[in-house]
Amino acid sequence: MNRRRFLGASAGVATGLAVGRKLQFLDRKVQAQDIDWWTYTLTNEAAGFLTQFNQNLDAGVPANQMNWYGFMSAALAIRSIERDYGLDATLESWYGWDPATAMVDAAYQEGSWDSFHAVAALPYVGLVVDNDPAWEQYRSYQSSDVWISGNGPLSTPNEAGWAEYAMRPALFTIPKNDPPPPPEDNAIMRLHGGLDAATIATCDCEIYPWYQSTSPSLPRVPLESGILWWPLFKADQCKLLNWSIYLATTTAIFVNNSPLGQSYKAARIAASLIPVILTAASKSFCS
Image (cartoon, rainbow, N blue to C red; front, side, top):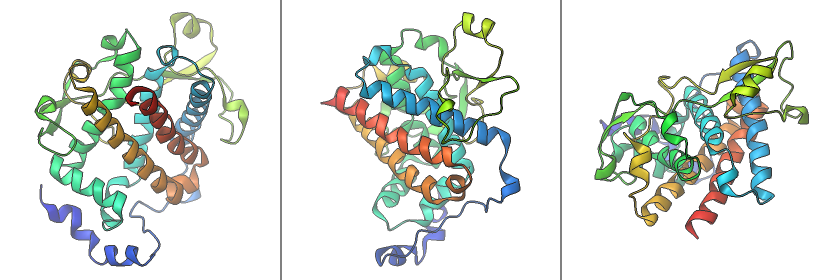
């Protein structure tokens, strides 16, 4: 990878950031007519699911009773939208501001932004593997076009090779003839995540997957990532989890100040909850 790809847009930005210059965003300008049904619906559903998920964690629901498959699906769907709205390019433009600098340097060393996001997505898969005995049924078993070098700050030789497409996503439901409410409406709290056959059969709903596994902006995952997660030393698992928290926290800042967050309030809610949930998982797993 040409390092100029990462740093070419960064000339002068580091100095500006050091003296408190307002962070610049390289994503597209979002006008009112750009608000599309799918982004509105998905961000609303993700905000509702993640809010309820976080409340369940706070209430002390055991980890093995939590819907980590739904969490992984919602979180990766949000990451895909963030990347569609210019996350990677914006982080490059922020080079010189510590969190962004760490992300850009790590992506350069991993070989590409796609490789970086693939390895950073491994803990999301790991939380499913550790808590959902059906995890193998979710695997895509399809190799992607993303190569993981195995010698970056996140990856090891264990993860080297072609990444595979992310797990098949969980599903969420939208009642028919019931448009999604605004994100501040508490009525958003409905059934989400992995749906059983009885729910699908009895719900008068439209049923949607959280994402398309082959979407270019969706993070891939290391090949046989579930199998790879188990042999890792706990210290390596926690290191990766901390990277995922670091990235999620940084992307929440991106969303809160970007056209994505300005147009979709629910995107701000969802993005802010992902690092909170990952931190709670880290405290439980790594302490």
